[in-house]
Image 1 (cartoon, rainbow, N blue to C red):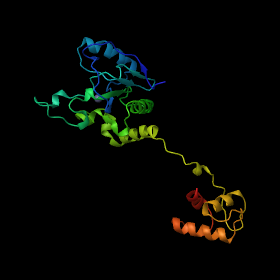
Image 2 (image 1 turned 120 degrees about the vertical axis):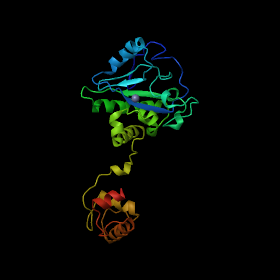
Image 3 (image 1 turned 120 degrees about the horizontal axis):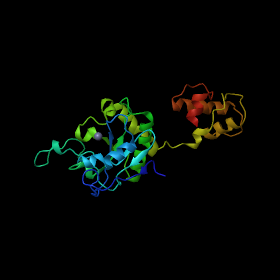
Image 4 (image 1 turned 135 degrees about the vertical axis):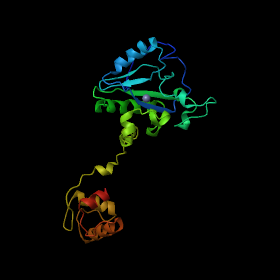
Length: 253
Ligand SMILES: [Zn+2]
């Protein structure tokens, strides 16, 4: 199941021009700047009034706290990120992302975050957008560094909260990255700390330490084990006391 549902708008030259994307190199993040309007109401708008008003605009996916809707097939162009007005007559002036020259709309997918009535983007919307974009990254073999803001292409203040606060955008990318590259769990890390082991301790936990330190695994914490622990502590930059406390244990395992 995808993180979004498809509800494509009809083909028309203003909002769904039915031009094939050349390639998907980046995911462009937007906000709708339209307080209180849901993903569904944007689908309706781009399928209705935007066409009636001859507005050349759209994006692929709209996300709110409740759902994400893909309104334009992901192999087609949406009009979300190109900046005709910023180029001179020879078309050479282009700010922003070199990989998206000369027309960002032909080389990217546009994702719009819907805005709450109070003008903010809700946490639910952000979390859903993270999932949507992680899925798009997998689909198009991109990584978190391929997420760009509309601002990065045209300097339009969009999505404004992520333009005003770069750290929020970076955090967003980190969340996507955490989905794409989950931390690899070392099974050895899962050996729980058994409590302090020192001269005189006995049992399986002592055996594990002995195994790790290449001394006889008899399960008895004697002088040889103690010396091996001290050597290990010294070479690992730990306090040298010959006692396996939490710090030494977690370094060992
Ligand atoms: Zn935008």
